[in-house]
Length: 99
Image 1 (tube, one colour):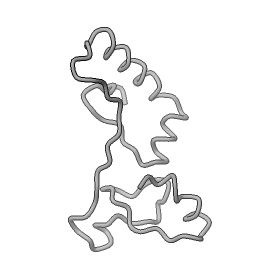
Image 2: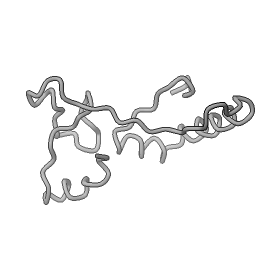
Image 3: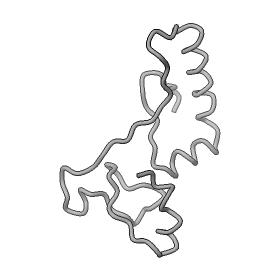
Image 4: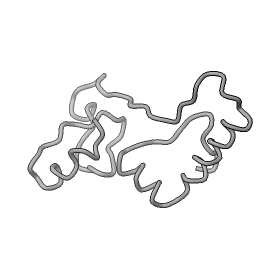
């Protein structure tokens, strides 16, 4: 589950969070431990999202232009804040090296 959904209720104290499944604590809930820190080793998850195109989409110019557009948005403060809020990590072979 994305943390952005229940976060307001957790912060208001009307809902108690379970441990987070990421490898590290998340900035939005710094007091909530990970599963491994809570004694549940081997638990966790990986949630992937991204930009997907049909197989065979030409690398130039379509994939190249899309990659440039995504990389151009990442340095913007509101994009970085949203990624941090949702505990998202940007990675992949098409991501910018200047992160």
